[in-house]
Amino acid sequence: MIAAKKPIDESTQAYLPDFCAAATLFIIVLVAELIAIALTLASYGPAQPFLIELSKTSFFILWIALLGTAVMCQLKGYLESAGQTRAFVIGFVVLEVMCLAVAEGAWQLTRIFGESLIINDTHTTFILRTFAISSIVIALAMRYLYISSEWRRSIVLEAQARISALQALIRPHFLFNSMNTIAALTRSDPARAEEAVEDLSDLLRANLGGPSNKSTLKQELETAAIYQRIEKLRLGDRLAVRWDIGDLPMRARIPSLTIQPLLENAIYHGIELLPDGGEVKVSGKRDDDHLEITISNPVATGEKRATGGNKMAMSNIQQRFELAYGGKASVVISDDHDQFKVTLRFPLDEGAK
Image (cartoon, rainbow, N blue to C red; front, side, top):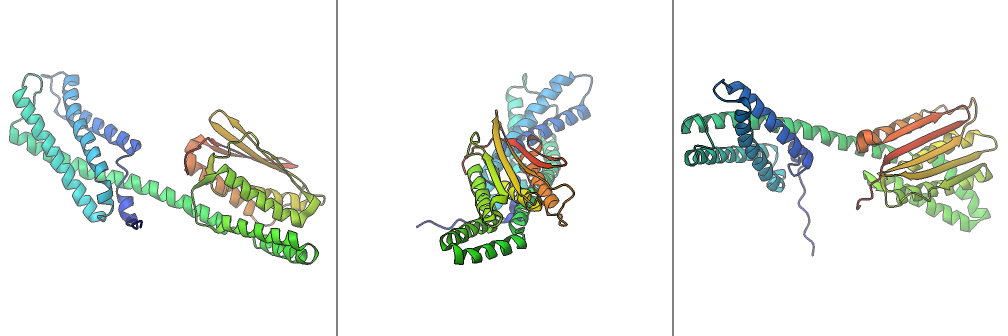
Protein backbone atom coordinates (compact mmCIF):
# COMPACT_ATOMS: atom_id res chain seq x y z
CA MET A 1 0.00 0.00 0.00
CA ILE A 2 1.43 3.40 -0.98
CA ALA A 3 1.42 6.04 1.71
CA ALA A 4 -0.17 9.36 0.84
CA LYS A 5 2.30 12.13 0.21
CA LYS A 6 2.21 14.87 2.82
CA PRO A 7 0.91 18.09 1.30
CA ILE A 8 3.31 21.02 1.23
CA ASP A 9 2.25 24.43 2.41
CA GLU A 10 2.25 26.63 -0.70
CA SER A 11 2.92 29.75 1.36
CA THR A 12 6.08 28.18 2.75
CA GLN A 13 7.15 27.09 -0.70
CA ALA A 14 6.83 30.71 -1.80
CA TYR A 15 8.87 31.90 1.16
CA LEU A 16 11.82 29.56 0.65
CA PRO A 17 13.73 29.45 -2.63
CA ASP A 18 15.18 26.21 -3.95
CA PHE A 19 18.62 26.23 -2.34
CA CYS A 20 19.49 23.10 -4.34
CA ALA A 21 19.07 24.95 -7.66
CA ALA A 22 22.13 26.15 -9.56
CA ALA A 23 20.56 29.59 -10.15
CA THR A 24 20.09 30.14 -6.41
CA LEU A 25 23.67 29.02 -5.72
CA PHE A 26 24.98 31.44 -8.34
CA ILE A 27 23.11 34.36 -6.77
CA ILE A 28 24.38 33.46 -3.29
CA VAL A 29 28.00 33.20 -4.45
CA LEU A 30 27.70 36.50 -6.33
CA VAL A 31 26.22 38.29 -3.31
CA ALA A 32 28.86 36.75 -1.03
CA GLU A 33 31.66 38.07 -3.23
CA LEU A 34 30.09 41.53 -3.34
CA ILE A 35 29.90 41.51 0.47
CA ALA A 36 33.56 40.49 0.62
CA ILE A 37 34.52 43.41 -1.61
CA ALA A 38 32.45 45.83 0.47
CA LEU A 39 33.94 44.63 3.76
CA THR A 40 37.47 44.78 2.35
CA LEU A 41 36.96 48.33 1.11
CA ALA A 42 35.52 49.34 4.49
CA SER A 43 38.48 48.00 6.48
CA TYR A 44 41.24 48.52 3.93
CA GLY A 45 44.34 50.34 5.04
CA PRO A 46 47.69 51.08 3.41
CA ALA A 47 49.45 48.54 5.64
CA GLN A 48 48.02 45.56 3.73
CA PRO A 49 47.76 45.02 -0.04
CA PHE A 50 44.12 45.20 -1.15
CA LEU A 51 44.10 41.92 -3.11
CA ILE A 52 45.53 39.96 -0.19
CA GLU A 53 42.88 41.35 2.15
CA LEU A 54 40.18 40.65 -0.42
CA SER A 55 41.34 37.07 -0.93
CA LYS A 56 41.24 36.36 2.83
CA THR A 57 37.83 37.93 3.26
CA SER A 58 36.44 36.20 0.16
CA PHE A 59 37.75 32.83 1.28
CA PHE A 60 36.07 33.19 4.68
CA ILE A 61 32.73 34.48 3.35
CA LEU A 62 32.51 31.99 0.47
CA TRP A 63 33.02 29.12 2.89
CA ILE A 64 30.10 30.41 4.93
CA ALA A 65 27.94 30.96 1.84
CA LEU A 66 28.58 27.52 0.33
CA LEU A 67 28.15 25.65 3.61
CA GLY A 68 24.98 27.61 4.35
CA THR A 69 23.53 26.78 0.95
CA ALA A 70 24.34 23.09 1.41
CA VAL A 71 22.70 23.06 4.86
CA MET A 72 19.56 24.82 3.61
CA CYS A 73 19.38 22.42 0.66
CA GLN A 74 19.44 19.46 3.04
CA LEU A 75 16.80 21.04 5.29
CA LYS A 76 14.54 22.01 2.38
CA GLY A 77 11.91 19.32 2.92
CA TYR A 78 11.64 19.95 6.67
CA LEU A 79 11.48 23.72 6.34
CA GLU A 80 8.81 23.58 3.62
CA SER A 81 6.49 21.78 6.06
CA ALA A 82 7.27 24.05 9.00
CA GLY A 83 5.31 27.15 7.99
CA GLN A 84 6.60 30.60 7.09
CA THR A 85 7.45 31.93 10.55
CA ARG A 86 9.06 28.74 11.83
CA ALA A 87 10.91 28.26 8.53
CA PHE A 88 12.44 31.74 8.85
CA VAL A 89 13.37 31.34 12.53
CA ILE A 90 14.83 27.86 12.09
CA GLY A 91 16.69 28.84 8.93
CA PHE A 92 18.06 31.99 10.55
CA VAL A 93 19.23 30.18 13.70
CA VAL A 94 20.81 27.33 11.75
CA LEU A 95 22.71 29.70 9.46
CA GLU A 96 23.79 31.88 12.39
CA VAL A 97 25.14 28.90 14.33
CA MET A 98 26.96 27.71 11.25
CA CYS A 99 28.52 31.16 10.74
CA LEU A 100 29.75 31.22 14.32
CA ALA A 101 31.12 27.70 13.97
CA VAL A 102 33.05 28.68 10.83
CA ALA A 103 34.30 31.84 12.57
CA GLU A 104 35.52 29.82 15.52
CA GLY A 105 37.22 27.38 13.18
CA ALA A 106 38.89 30.21 11.31
CA TRP A 107 40.13 31.72 14.58
CA GLN A 108 41.56 28.41 15.75
CA LEU A 109 43.32 27.91 12.41
CA THR A 110 44.77 31.39 12.73
CA ARG A 111 46.03 30.55 16.21
CA ILE A 112 47.66 27.34 14.95
CA PHE A 113 48.86 28.55 11.53
CA GLY A 114 49.39 32.20 12.28
CA GLU A 115 51.84 32.72 9.44
CA SER A 116 49.33 31.82 6.72
CA LEU A 117 46.01 32.97 8.17
CA ILE A 118 45.92 36.34 9.91
CA ILE A 119 42.89 37.80 11.72
CA ASN A 120 43.62 41.25 13.09
CA ASP A 121 41.10 41.02 15.94
CA THR A 122 40.87 39.51 19.37
CA HIS A 123 38.90 36.29 19.69
CA THR A 124 35.86 37.93 21.27
CA THR A 125 35.84 40.88 18.88
CA PHE A 126 36.12 38.64 15.83
CA ILE A 127 33.24 36.39 16.96
CA LEU A 128 31.04 39.36 17.85
CA ARG A 129 31.78 41.10 14.53
CA THR A 130 30.97 37.90 12.67
CA PHE A 131 27.73 37.53 14.61
CA ALA A 132 26.61 41.11 13.94
CA ILE A 133 27.51 41.16 10.25
CA SER A 134 26.13 37.66 9.56
CA SER A 135 22.85 38.49 11.33
CA ILE A 136 22.28 41.50 9.10
CA VAL A 137 23.38 39.75 5.92
CA ILE A 138 21.36 36.58 6.58
CA ALA A 139 18.19 38.58 7.30
CA LEU A 140 18.61 40.72 4.18
CA ALA A 141 19.56 37.72 2.03
CA MET A 142 16.58 35.66 3.15
CA ARG A 143 14.31 38.63 2.47
CA TYR A 144 15.76 39.08 -1.01
CA LEU A 145 15.52 35.38 -1.79
CA TYR A 146 11.93 35.39 -0.55
CA ILE A 147 11.00 38.25 -2.89
CA SER A 148 12.80 36.56 -5.79
CA SER A 149 11.13 33.22 -5.08
CA GLU A 150 7.72 34.87 -4.72
CA TRP A 151 8.20 36.57 -8.09
CA ARG A 152 9.06 33.26 -9.76
CA ARG A 153 6.09 31.60 -8.11
CA SER A 154 3.77 34.33 -9.37
CA ILE A 155 5.07 33.71 -12.89
CA VAL A 156 4.27 30.00 -12.61
CA LEU A 157 0.79 30.72 -11.26
CA GLU A 158 0.18 33.24 -14.04
CA ALA A 159 1.20 30.65 -16.65
CA GLN A 160 -1.19 28.11 -15.11
CA ALA A 161 -3.96 30.71 -15.07
CA ARG A 162 -3.40 31.41 -18.77
CA ILE A 163 -3.63 27.70 -19.55
CA SER A 164 -6.89 27.55 -17.60
CA ALA A 165 -8.16 30.57 -19.54
CA LEU A 166 -7.40 28.83 -22.82
CA GLN A 167 -9.10 25.68 -21.58
CA ALA A 168 -12.23 27.69 -20.80
CA LEU A 169 -12.14 29.52 -24.13
CA ILE A 170 -14.28 27.09 -26.15
CA ARG A 171 -16.45 29.26 -28.31
CA PRO A 172 -20.16 28.54 -27.82
CA HIS A 173 -20.76 28.65 -31.57
CA PHE A 174 -18.33 25.74 -32.03
CA LEU A 175 -20.21 23.58 -29.53
CA PHE A 176 -23.61 24.51 -30.99
CA ASN A 177 -22.47 23.85 -34.54
CA SER A 178 -20.83 20.57 -33.56
CA MET A 179 -23.94 19.35 -31.76
CA ASN A 180 -26.15 20.34 -34.72
CA THR A 181 -23.82 18.51 -37.10
CA ILE A 182 -23.89 15.41 -34.91
CA ALA A 183 -27.70 15.59 -34.66
CA ALA A 184 -27.96 15.70 -38.46
CA LEU A 185 -25.53 12.78 -38.84
CA THR A 186 -27.50 10.58 -36.45
CA ARG A 187 -30.19 10.36 -39.12
CA SER A 188 -28.05 10.18 -42.27
CA ASP A 189 -24.84 8.47 -41.06
CA PRO A 190 -25.04 7.04 -37.51
CA ALA A 191 -21.50 5.62 -37.67
CA ARG A 192 -19.95 9.00 -38.44
CA ALA A 193 -22.15 10.60 -35.77
CA GLU A 194 -20.74 8.16 -33.23
CA GLU A 195 -17.19 8.98 -34.32
CA ALA A 196 -17.97 12.69 -34.07
CA VAL A 197 -19.28 12.26 -30.51
CA GLU A 198 -16.09 10.44 -29.54
CA ASP A 199 -13.94 13.16 -31.16
CA LEU A 200 -15.88 15.90 -29.39
CA SER A 201 -15.48 14.03 -26.10
CA ASP A 202 -11.73 13.71 -26.62
CA LEU A 203 -11.43 17.38 -27.53
CA LEU A 204 -13.37 18.50 -24.45
CA ARG A 205 -11.24 16.24 -22.28
CA ALA A 206 -8.07 17.79 -23.70
CA ASN A 207 -9.36 21.35 -23.26
CA LEU A 208 -11.08 20.98 -19.89
CA GLY A 209 -8.69 18.57 -18.20
CA GLY A 210 -6.34 19.55 -15.39
CA PRO A 211 -3.91 22.30 -16.39
CA SER A 212 -0.33 21.32 -17.20
CA ASN A 213 2.50 23.57 -18.25
CA LYS A 214 3.75 21.46 -21.13
CA SER A 215 2.71 18.48 -23.22
CA THR A 216 4.38 16.51 -25.97
CA LEU A 217 4.19 17.67 -29.56
CA LYS A 218 2.41 14.42 -30.39
CA GLN A 219 -0.37 15.19 -27.91
CA GLU A 220 -0.72 18.75 -29.22
CA LEU A 221 -0.97 17.58 -32.84
CA GLU A 222 -3.47 14.84 -31.96
CA THR A 223 -5.71 17.38 -30.24
CA ALA A 224 -5.48 19.69 -33.27
CA ALA A 225 -6.29 16.78 -35.61
CA ILE A 226 -9.40 15.96 -33.57
CA TYR A 227 -10.55 19.56 -33.87
CA GLN A 228 -9.93 19.43 -37.62
CA ARG A 229 -12.08 16.30 -38.02
CA ILE A 230 -14.99 17.89 -36.17
CA GLU A 231 -14.83 21.08 -38.25
CA LYS A 232 -14.46 19.03 -41.43
CA LEU A 233 -17.86 17.44 -40.78
CA ARG A 234 -19.43 20.89 -40.74
CA LEU A 235 -17.46 22.70 -43.46
CA GLY A 236 -16.98 19.74 -45.81
CA ASP A 237 -14.94 20.52 -48.92
CA ARG A 238 -14.56 24.16 -47.89
CA LEU A 239 -11.92 23.10 -45.35
CA ALA A 240 -8.60 21.50 -46.18
CA VAL A 241 -5.66 21.13 -43.80
CA ARG A 242 -2.22 20.19 -45.09
CA TRP A 243 0.16 18.76 -42.50
CA ASP A 244 3.87 18.96 -43.26
CA ILE A 245 5.34 17.93 -39.92
CA GLY A 246 7.33 14.81 -40.75
CA ASP A 247 10.60 16.35 -39.57
CA LEU A 248 9.34 17.18 -36.08
CA PRO A 249 10.30 14.98 -33.10
CA MET A 250 7.02 13.88 -31.55
CA ARG A 251 8.52 13.63 -28.05
CA ALA A 252 9.43 17.32 -28.02
CA ARG A 253 7.79 19.38 -25.27
CA ILE A 254 5.70 22.47 -25.99
CA PRO A 255 3.42 24.68 -23.86
CA SER A 256 0.02 23.02 -23.59
CA LEU A 257 -2.84 24.11 -25.81
CA THR A 258 -0.75 25.91 -28.40
CA ILE A 259 -1.42 24.35 -31.80
CA GLN A 260 -5.15 23.62 -31.49
CA PRO A 261 -6.08 27.26 -30.65
CA LEU A 262 -3.97 28.44 -33.59
CA LEU A 263 -5.72 26.00 -35.93
CA GLU A 264 -9.06 27.10 -34.51
CA ASN A 265 -8.22 30.74 -35.21
CA ALA A 266 -7.11 29.89 -38.73
CA ILE A 267 -10.46 28.24 -39.44
CA TYR A 268 -12.70 30.64 -37.53
CA HIS A 269 -11.09 33.90 -38.67
CA GLY A 270 -9.95 32.70 -42.08
CA ILE A 271 -11.58 29.71 -43.79
CA GLU A 272 -15.15 30.30 -42.55
CA LEU A 273 -15.20 33.82 -43.99
CA LEU A 274 -14.22 32.64 -47.49
CA PRO A 275 -17.21 31.62 -49.66
CA ASP A 276 -15.22 28.79 -51.24
CA GLY A 277 -13.21 27.99 -48.14
CA GLY A 278 -9.48 27.36 -48.37
CA GLU A 279 -6.49 25.43 -47.07
CA VAL A 280 -4.74 25.73 -43.73
CA LYS A 281 -1.12 24.68 -43.85
CA VAL A 282 0.66 23.41 -40.74
CA SER A 283 4.37 22.90 -41.34
CA GLY A 284 7.29 22.25 -39.06
CA LYS A 285 11.03 21.76 -39.18
CA ARG A 286 13.97 21.25 -36.90
CA ASP A 287 16.74 23.82 -36.91
CA ASP A 288 19.63 22.43 -34.83
CA ASP A 289 18.44 22.69 -31.22
CA HIS A 290 15.27 24.65 -32.08
CA LEU A 291 11.91 23.71 -33.57
CA GLU A 292 9.87 25.90 -35.87
CA ILE A 293 6.13 25.43 -36.52
CA THR A 294 4.14 27.59 -38.92
CA ILE A 295 0.34 27.77 -39.27
CA SER A 296 -0.88 29.77 -42.26
CA ASN A 297 -4.30 30.36 -43.76
CA PRO A 298 -5.91 32.52 -46.45
CA VAL A 299 -8.03 35.45 -45.32
CA ALA A 300 -11.00 37.20 -46.86
CA THR A 301 -10.14 40.76 -47.89
CA GLY A 302 -12.16 43.25 -45.88
CA GLU A 303 -13.87 40.54 -43.81
CA LYS A 304 -13.14 40.26 -40.08
CA ARG A 305 -14.89 38.82 -37.08
CA ALA A 306 -16.36 41.30 -34.64
CA THR A 307 -14.85 39.41 -31.68
CA GLY A 308 -11.29 40.01 -30.51
CA GLY A 309 -10.72 36.32 -29.77
CA ASN A 310 -7.92 36.06 -32.32
CA LYS A 311 -5.85 38.78 -30.63
CA MET A 312 -6.59 37.31 -27.21
CA ALA A 313 -5.36 33.86 -28.19
CA MET A 314 -2.26 35.29 -29.88
CA SER A 315 -1.41 37.40 -26.84
CA ASN A 316 -2.01 34.44 -24.55
CA ILE A 317 0.34 32.17 -26.49
CA GLN A 318 3.00 34.88 -26.82
CA GLN A 319 3.05 35.53 -23.10
CA ARG A 320 3.11 31.83 -22.21
CA PHE A 321 6.04 31.27 -24.57
CA GLU A 322 7.84 34.18 -22.91
CA LEU A 323 7.19 32.65 -19.50
CA ALA A 324 8.30 29.19 -20.61
CA TYR A 325 11.40 30.10 -22.64
CA GLY A 326 12.25 33.73 -21.97
CA GLY A 327 14.16 35.21 -24.90
CA LYS A 328 14.94 31.77 -26.36
CA ALA A 329 11.59 31.48 -28.16
CA SER A 330 9.48 33.68 -30.42
CA VAL A 331 5.95 33.94 -31.78
CA VAL A 332 6.00 35.86 -35.06
CA ILE A 333 2.74 36.98 -36.66
CA SER A 334 2.58 37.93 -40.34
CA ASP A 335 -0.70 39.46 -41.51
CA ASP A 336 -0.60 40.15 -45.25
CA HIS A 337 -3.58 41.19 -47.34
CA ASP A 338 -4.58 37.65 -48.27
CA GLN A 339 -2.54 35.43 -45.94
CA PHE A 340 -2.25 35.14 -42.16
CA LYS A 341 0.72 33.28 -40.73
CA VAL A 342 1.92 32.44 -37.22
CA THR A 343 5.44 31.07 -36.73
CA LEU A 344 6.46 29.46 -33.46
CA ARG A 345 10.15 29.02 -32.74
CA PHE A 346 11.26 27.43 -29.47
CA PRO A 347 14.10 25.32 -28.00
CA LEU A 348 14.00 21.57 -28.49
CA ASP A 349 13.12 19.83 -25.23
CA GLU A 350 12.66 16.08 -25.24
CA GLY A 351 12.79 15.67 -21.46
CA ALA A 352 10.83 13.07 -19.62
CA LYS A 353 7.22 13.88 -18.82
